[in-house]
Image 1 (cartoon, rainbow, N blue to C red):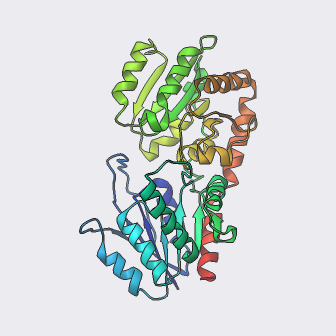
Image 2 (image 1 turned 30 degrees about the horizontal axis):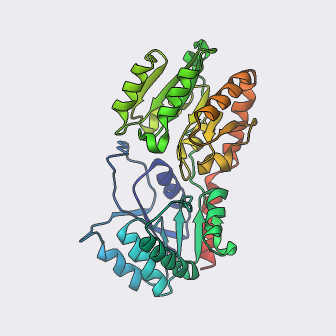
Image 3 (image 1 turned 120 degrees about the horizontal axis):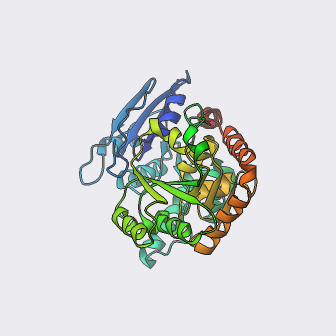
Length: 361
């Protein structure tokens, strides 16, 4: 029996699916630690079902769970996976695991290698990363963009493994939507935190305003601090009959949401590896997405299962929407190809990666 301790940020439906799948592997004894069980920004209500997994939530004193740090030092024959380092407990855990030459891996989104940082902090961060890269067993990167960025940061290629987020392909699938088939408009869907500087929902709304030669609608799912600003923008542009805000949608209702539209519109300025793109494609939605989003670059093939626009460019977003509309006669092929792409990325792959890591530790 191989002991695995996994520290991650918070409970999500895709990680819960991954951990539940891992729990079915006989030779893995898994304990999952959450920095926080729930986040106000992600108020999931449904408790996911787990198998034989021990679940813990960090209990911190001055920002650190010292019990977890103790485990990092003294736990024997235990493999650690730390999902990121932007938390004090995670940072200390990685540092201590490296210092004591323990076996551990880091699972990370696509790093923002071009982000400008304070000179002192940036230099210290660079030195710390160089030290960690010499000690870490594996870097588990989400997709090809993540792999490429980690290599640019100096990690050896043989230490980097492709480990994308996973999607429950039975839950997220193509379903018949009678309302959509009767809809006279072409319906675009967007979702995510309502933060314009991140997700760019304002760009999606402005694109709808600019496209006047076709009857299109936009449905936006999600909550966030820019909700009022977005509502005011819709009112200002007189789009009340073309843009709809759906609020927070629970996981059980997400497949119906994705199946209610003709395409998924993702206008983020930067997104490491947005899971909503994976869910949309699993439900057979062609994706029109940003070239600064990891899962877009990893999964979307121009003209095959979607289209890629230039991040932050309203002109590019409008252009790609129009290209999709011009190809609406190919909608069934685009939908099938999106689903086919999703089926190429099953949780079995992730399980095999973890088993291989533990077998060779």
